[in-house]
Amino acid sequence: MARRHTPYYHKFLALGAEMVDRIGFDSAFKFTSIEAEHLATRNRAGLYDVYYQVLLDIKGRDAEKLLQRTLVNDVGRLAVGKAIYSSVCNDKGGMVDDLTCLRLDRDHFWLCPTPSRVDIVTAWMAEQALDMNAYVTNLGAGRAFISVQGPRARDILARLTDADLTTAQLPYYSWTRGRVADIPDTVISRTGYSGELGYELFYPGEYSEHMWDAVSAAGCIDGMVPCGLGALRSVRIEKRYPLYGLDLDETTSPLEAGLGWTVKFDKPDFIGRDALLRQRDRGVTRSLAIVEFPGLEFVPAPGDLIALDGRTIGKVTSADRGFYLRKSLALGYVEPAAAKPGLSVTVKGNKGVVGTKAPYDPERLRPRA
Image: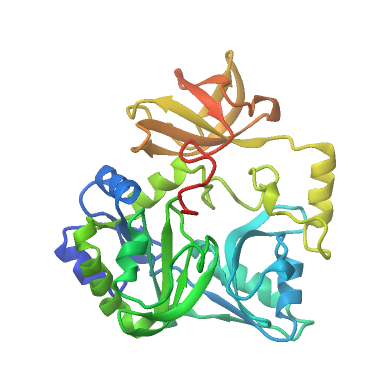
């Protein structure tokens, strides 16, 4: 089947991008090198095409009730203009998806699910809404989406909008609406997958090419570069951000994945609550940990076994090079007793050190700057 093209496809070809399939779209894997794009994001700014991201619109008198039933986090505490990270779980506490939720109004929300899980999450939400006054709409290609990530992101976007992007007015995990590059009805969300100061822009799809050109031009003097999927995945692993489909699936729970902070047991009942309560009270049987390997030469493969003193204690779920830290990094599920910072383990004979926090900026200071 022929792959679809984003509105930026011809621009990427002209820039010499290496293209790969991303859920049916021809998407840029890299423009120059993953390392160069990774370091640009950490030191200056990177511009990411995430056109394949799809928004789900949740609207109606029972919109909040629907999301309280289906999300493990507490949507009731979410003010208009704010966003939260959460999971959608099944009855067994397994993760249907991890996603971001934005509150647009009292009875109006957007969900940003994992692109490969959009149809599944849409169907899940629609099924749960059958007895409610809530409407679930896949916005499809009606809105476009790009992401500007890096310490110069604010300076770059400030040249294009009158919106107040300061942390005082637009803190981490909040959003505002305004004009960007003269494009109306743009949502500027202080979120991202890089662990840096960053903004995600949602805007009418007919302005896709104009927005890319305008943001690219505004970022030239700051050394911003276009970045592909390779850099997006390498910056995320330095932050220990799990990736759905590799580190997360319907058999893993938020508690096992180190995302217990998103599960609010004191809110109204939600799908998976009983299973997660049992898991919380009895303890998990595995924990997602990160293993750091010195240098960039050895990169484990998903499925590689993690061993302690010659005994298998878990397996790798994803791995990549952490170009800023000059270390290779692997995520994997291990026995809970082995999820201890500083523990020495091996993968295919290569020594690594276990961590539980993000190796890069563990206190999350940079995205809050």
